[in-house]
Length: 329
Ligand code: NCD
Image (tube, rainbow, N blue to C red):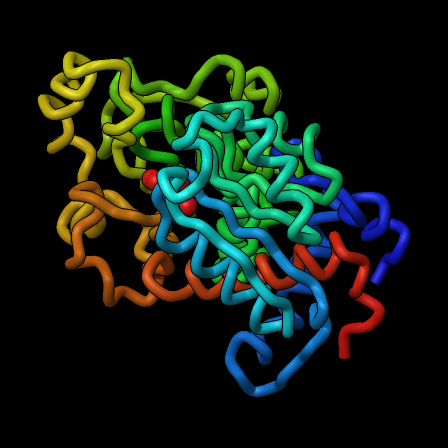
């Protein structure tokens, strides 16, 4: 364990963007997350976060992120205070976002927030005195999802993704899918040689801002709207659902409906195009883009391994942020 790296990258830090991590920080986090597994599996017990309170404030809907963050914190002996919809907050009584965050900040030692608008997590972090974890801000980012995704790729792949060249096909709504906006820079930080194959209709391409920030170029990334061609030869396939609620208008939603049947992975397409070892991954929730007929393949990791690894990452992160890694036994 490199304590200097952990202190520098995590202690008292906000977790706002995937871009903030270094390879060394990610290696420390992933190694520590692996040590959380016996606790997540109830083989060993730990009270390392006893006495701390996490605020878990989700202004918009969530299944996995909220519940896994809360379960992780409580599994380590911490307590959680929560709300699951801004309509249960005084923002419905015209309180400002800034006043809401500064009040909530008083009650807890660390906050996980899910917010409606891109950039709001950074605004909250500026207001709060305690560390803020971005649990998804509009079409912005979702860094903890990307952490659990990359951790899962590493853990489930038959090769070392950090040091071996590989190809990932990222398929679906790349424009509004915030998990993709965090996954791309995180893979660039952690892996020495990753080839990105983006697969989407033209109008849902990855935003130029994400491409630029992640320093993508012709040599490490390409785009196609041809699904079968795009997934051929990939070592990892990452599917995302259409973010219908964030599309500009009905016209954009209609455009998606016209093409959606071209972007569905099922067993026969998988057999026809993919390397049989290819990992099939999805952050959830899935819609029609991923057939339940793939669920029982050993390389389908979206049903159990990604959600379980989410708990490990969301245990390790607050331990580092609250500076308790030395107390962990
Ligand atoms: C994602 C999200 O909320 O961004 N879900 C998640 O947290 N696992 C993906 C999505 O909503 O499509």
